[in-house]
Amino acid sequence: MGGQACVLYGAAQFSRDLDLLILVSQENIERLGAALAGLDAVNIAVPKFESGYLGRGHAVHFRCRHPEVAGLRIDVMSVLRNVEPFERLWERRTTLVSDGEEIDLLSLEDLVAAKLTQRDKDWSMVRRLVEQDYFSSDEHPGRDRRAFWLRRLRTPGLLIAAANDDPELARSICQTRPAVCAALEGAQDLVQSRLDEEERSEKEQDAAYWRPLRQELEQLRRSARE
Image 1: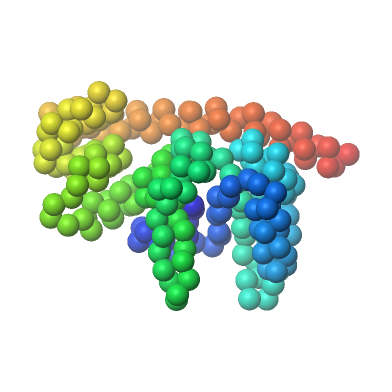
Image 2 (image 1 turned 180 degrees about the vertical axis):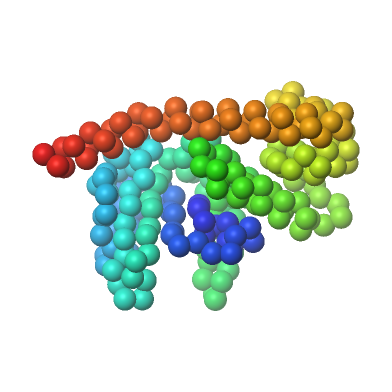
């Protein structure tokens, strides 16, 4: 669901960590625990690897010590801001095959939604992910794909081009995304201004989402020190 997924979608060259989204159940916790043990992975920070913390939206962090993956960090979550519950994400997942092994990824649209965070580097990744999809499309993309570009493109010129390609669809989306309204007018500076406003708003929402979780983590750290 993180950097490795971005690599597999062709929008990044490498990632040093592995981010996993799991369905919280006792069976899954035990299976993942066994897999982590096989990697000699240790819990490196609060919180502990428990379903309660995962269910509240926390990430649980591990560092691998097995010689073949020494130093690899693995972050595990089960709830993400801006996306639907795990069961729905699983239905929409993208499955790739590499060396005969299946790899399940968040769908591109869900991955992009999950990347709308406080971190500047995530916003540059969102731009690359959507542009990679835009430029790799065939000559006759479906309506759902065109709608995805109109909802998520972050380059003014490309958003204007996408709006011009399907003005009717763009008008339906501009009701919820003001940048698309500006794109329909061909006003590149106004598109950029509204994209900037959109980014600021998402960053504020992400900060508000994480504030109580960070407070809980700080309490856990204090308790651990005591």
